[in-house]
Length: 258
Image (tube, rainbow, N blue to C red; front, side):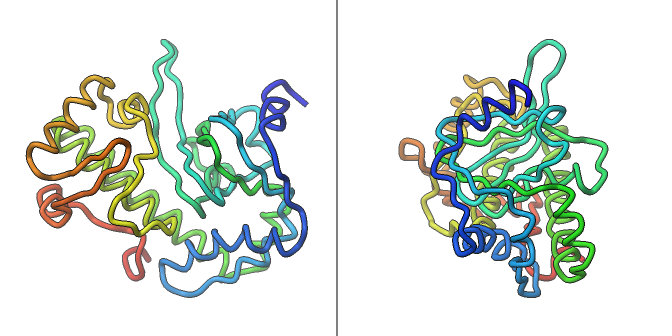
């Protein structure tokens, strides 16, 4: 076992291994997959579950060291995928709320396999990769539901990438806030006021802005009346107007992604 794996295992607390507890944890994935239409019974995944773990503080999982034989599903909390440039700069490529498959590209044969950071107090379902592949090979409806979900994630990421390339800072951050809200809703958080799950630096790494620029742009969005912010919580006051101005599409709902 390498150093990175030792660190990850050292972060795990309150491991749960009974059938009932594993079934409850896997239910977060089933609820999320069902957003795109057909109700999904994810209980077939239970034999592939190694454990359900609680992460005490922000914890990176490195693709080259930890992804080879595991798949991570977020049961609760928040996570993000990231890559590092040679000069040490970090780019956050995607975000994950409860029910999300955090490194599915390692199963699907994707060319881009990123590192993942689980935020403090997250709970993570750890699945054996080979057992998972065997399970979904025999479960057509489950396999197709996962494929629809990952296609929706890919479409949303492409939409954000186009915006990050073409839009100025205000619109870029507004687009990112819509994505964060969309991801939290897909994970089951439908509250009007949403806790901002990322720090200013992490928002910067997601949008290509500095943390100072993010702070100033958030204030500008407040002054424009697009958002209301209270500490680390925010509310999108003009979501329909923002959506129309940015030509924003929601992909995590029935009928949006074949």
